Image (cartoon, rainbow, N blue to C red; front, side):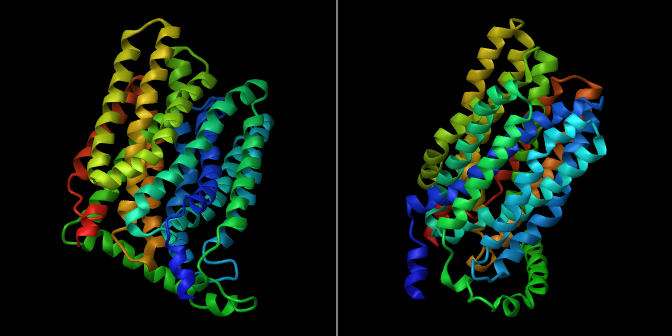
Length: 431
């Protein structure tokens, strides 16, 4: 047993790449969902504000479920491990409901499309926290920035496949990106189940699951209460400030991700598939820089790396706004956006790669899943706030306010991040 535990905590690139397929599968789905579902909802003559609210219904489930499922998976013991059962149940059902989205558009029944979206996001929430929690499970604390870089690299590959593969598929048939994306996500998640083995201490023999599950829900509820107490009880408020930073920068990011294709089509006058391709360039540079961003975080500190990334992304969005106002030639502006968003991907990698390791390094191994749930509680809260807020400004003022709103929240994140005093790998080593 001791030997298995020891090897489990080694930094193995091959094992992390295999684990990365889970993040790859998840990252194929969300870019397609965010790029095309708002366009689908326009078929029903909904306002941007209404579309924003529709896009948040799914995230309400995530807000409720992700902290619970993170804590629940911490306590789960089965013959497959503590994280794997959630993947085995959630991934196939999420793939099925994701593939039904274009069909519900064809049927032009709004309530049915919304119901399917809710179920799809429920099933995605079922396995997201457990998949992400596997990274700190198999990685020593001092290597988690590098490991998260590898995982985010694989996520970038998934987003790249979605954006660049999604355009020709969408141009051929609007349903194809969803059908292909569902299949790829399912294959990727099953690779994780097949090749990433959890530590023996989280696995039990066949027939013993009932004994292990007897008090799991009660214990998970108590863990959630303890985790939420940690957010507000610490003297230096580092956990709260870090979670607020995550909330703010994901509001800024999610507003752009949700409405940029609409901004491209209705403000600039280029097709939604081209707008999605611009976001694809962002994902390409994010992917390419994910692994270096992890090593930079380990070298100069996570907080400093995230600060640099926020400054860069703030400037990129500001420049996007100015270029959109100043350049009338659509072809030239499209090329400028490709360049600007390519730079933005570097900044987002510096932020995103180092944020989760900062959170989980504020706690113990036994509560990693719960703290991963906290991370998603605040990031998914941003997904609830951003779409209707951005949609409201678009409806009441103009599409240009989308970029202003994003800049404001990246600026707020930059401020709150400076109050984070714990979770940095260099500080942890010093202690």
